[in-house]
Image (cartoon, rainbow, N blue to C red; front, side, top):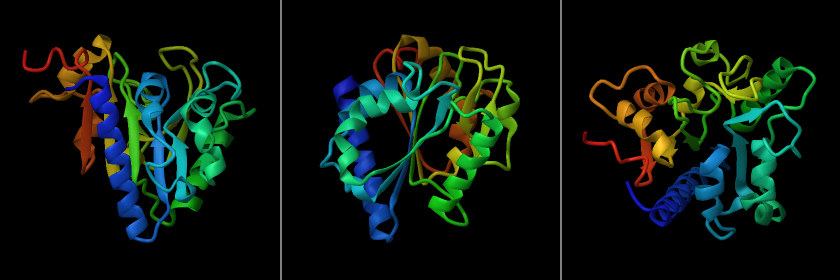
Amino acid sequence: MAPLATLQQQLRQLVQEAAQRALAEGRRVSVAIPGGSVATQLLSALRADDIDWGASDVFWCDERAVAPTHPDSNYGTSVAGWLAALVGSGIRLHRMHGDAPSLDDAARRYDEELSSSLGLSPRLDLAIVGVGEDGHVCSLFPGHPALREADRLAVAVRDAPKPPTDRLTLTLPFVAASRLVVVAALGASKAGAMRAALSDTPGTTPVAQLLQLTERAVVLLDLEAARDLGR
């Protein structure tokens, strides 16, 4: 648990370390990013000189079924915000096409794009995920069928419990297989979900499942999100 400025610095360091490992192993750096408060408050602290962005591939954890110019677009929000300064660096941005006529086709194309970019055993260097009040990560909601997808890298989501109800998302096993997963939760509304996920009996919320599945995870909580820990 830490103030926002400290979390920003910690995230920058984690991104730098992931990039150094990838480049030392002769790979491009692959990062999946979220939308929401994590994008606007944490990712916004990333700078052009943090890593070699020209050797980086940025994917999205999830996207809403909207055009990239829509205010709800995770892609559009990031490109208009912190990513704007990096576009000229040669960074490769892999947009989820939430505005495609068929979300199923869009999910299949993203699956193929991930495999093409990451190789035969596709694995991200770093997945940064936010957490919802109900413990959802990406667009994987408690009890939703998409949470049980075990074979695909990306899937379409319909009937999500919060609007917009149609979305695209990376799957839980694929995110969990990342070399490093950063789970970030900001605000008092996330306190209950994080207390449950980090308890001795974490339950079955998506964030709890993710933390149980992944080999290496770092949890970043601001003071409000961490307020219930230890109770």
